[in-house]
Image (cartoon, rainbow over all chains, first blue to last red; front, side):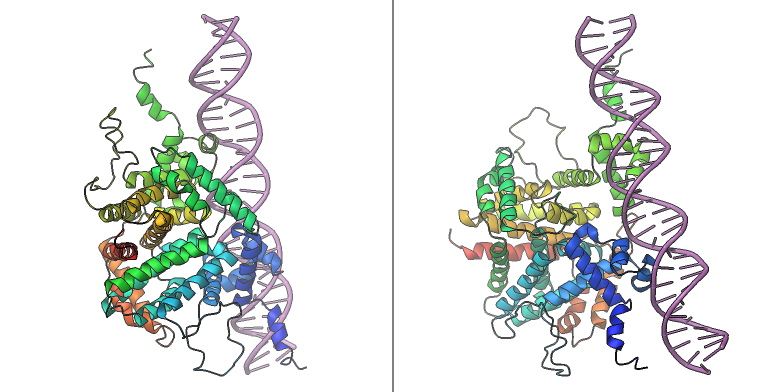
Length: 258
Length: 258
DNA sequence: TCCAATATTGGAGCGCTGCTCCAAAGCTGC
DNA sequence: GCAGCTTTGGAGCAGCGCTCCAATATTGGA
């Protein structure tokens, strides 16, 4: 009796890889990095561990899928959406940052991609560790190519000679992932719970770090001792863009007139 | 009967934080990232877990100490050793890379520091994940300041204006850690054992990655598809230095005539 | 010299983890 | 209606970090 009509709603009840990954992301967001366990996932989905492993196979694989999902949502779409106007509203990523489309310079596009990842890490603090881990564990696995492609296209749009495409893109990607990793401010012991990351917390955290640098032996750490206050007053986002700008300058200065 | 004479040898039998950290590093080197467990450590030191926790307190703390030890050995000494000639041969780090001392440009010194970390990661593949993890978990904790100081001094020696010291050093450090993280080639599933990392293995690994890029949908990944062969032929170390050079160019080009 | 106080040791055991295994249940096509 | 597949959920296993504690060295004062 009309099983087709209500099928889509029934679908949501059925366990699927997508639903598991979705629940994993929510669990990571709300409970923090250590909150994703098979048992917690099973309870949240009202099922058992066996059912989960039937769809997912591996905890690392699940983490990889969760990371890939969030990263894909944070980056501009791979295909220009004008090509296939089949379903005009569905495939638009809901929480993607407003990308300046194809207007604007390649430099701006690179900045936009970088900021997209930066913001994604702010929204999902567990993402930083995952990006770093997957960068080391499977460098060319699932996530990196997606980022590489987004950056590389813009590098190609700059006047970079072809033989430098790989090295240039790699440099940008490595910087982005390295800088992004640091900016998920998880003050050491404060793990396990959610991450409200209020402005007061951040200020307090930077204060403590700055004081720690100032308390270092000036004979061992003269530089840190000097710039401790500069570190306290820095703005993450601005500092991140400064780094991008520095590299972009190096790129365009290397071959100024294509 | 003469307990003082043989005391130094007896010291080596006594459990101490140093001995535990040393054993941890060896365990990580020989057994791989997952090989460091309290039980394995206890067996290797012929003791129990309780004794270990009496000295170390925490698994994360132990990892942090192991990382700090290896990083300290890979970087140039903080103090210029001419100041305290008390013990001329002992404190020389045994496996430190040959640093070009104070001769040479600041750019060369930065390259030397970066390569020191790069080589340390090659020698201790677990270090990549640890650097990344500690970068995110305790950004200003134990290891980062050490690296920051080494790089920052050289940034100061360049013609960088004082207000840019922090941003410039951060950019270099972030790139170094990001790039370093990727270059500990752990081909995904091949974890658990030691990492001989022969040239053949590396070539095979790059071949597979290159083929994977070529097999991607050219409509989704035109850039990766294009530079797949360039990726296969790249040399990690050279590519790493290219990135450093790019950033150094950006730094010096930004303020060309101090 | 001896003894109490303290520091250090090693292992049993707790609660948790990822993961496997399997009987039961649901679904599908003949 | 039934056979053959997929999917489910939970019991259970080996391993983990870590705590606790009795037993043992070591030390300092009388």
